[in-house]
Length: 417
Image (cartoon, rainbow, N blue to C red):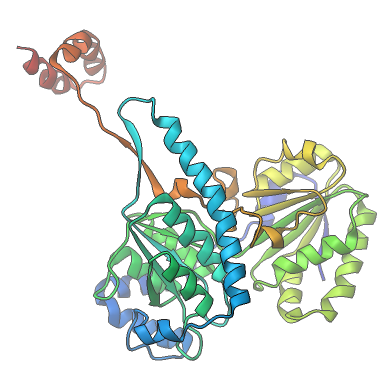
């Protein structure tokens, strides 16, 4: 069951709860990436068979695969609504960004030429993640969008994921795991390399993204999901429990927790979880997740609550307290802050217009969710005249002399003769 922990020193507590990458896992991922770099498609197919138990003849989905990707009208309508709400937010942001630099000389935003979008799959279905990455890339104007997603036991990709990807004109490949990240980063015969890799995944995908980031850009470390909830005595313990469960059902690697100053509320939440978990679907996964990674942190005061929330910086942070809007101004660490009793993270995952691809493992402290910003490059183009160089030459000589780089000045001086 979920642990109730007293917080003494905030920094020590954060360090003790941070999920760390094992050397063994990193070594495994590195060997997969090295193999894909050397052997391309054959290595990718080998690992697909090893991890998914299905032999893959062709990595790119066929016309027949596309034709077989049938979904119901209700499913299509729900995908469409989610995409439209996300698109509206991203379009406004994109327009505002472009407008913001129009009056700045020599500067403009240009789309990244190609991106790879990792969509989790296999035995799970995450078409919502396809919406969050693929539609956002399309709104930014990316010309080449590549989707990689692990197939199920029958060798098929989720038809709803295919529908979203095809709507955006993306290339779609039946491959997942670290081998998919390697293919996107290094290129193979079937999969041409991309300029940037985005999207969430399990620990092997996150490790692979971190490794390839030395030569291929990535969006962020978006690993197993995280949800923190700040509660006070006014919070509904059962609602808190259901929200924890909603994120914990993703996998047994998720981290779902509560921060409070109330020990009595912590005990109530613990009792609610104990009552709810045996009655739900996916209870085995939820129980493992809550028991392994979950906790209720009891802080001495509100200042410690705020400090802990900002330093642990989870992917999602719900504020189920009185004065949640006022408190939200002080909560700047998490990737997404959800205000009040009626803003559950599960709704934000689908239909609130926010992007659910969010930073994990503390990276919320330095960036927010995926957006058109991730697919745009700030382009600078400048031209100077001889008269401009003449005007700055004296100051330039002072600076180049100070740094011991005299040839920098000579390159300018020669132009002035």
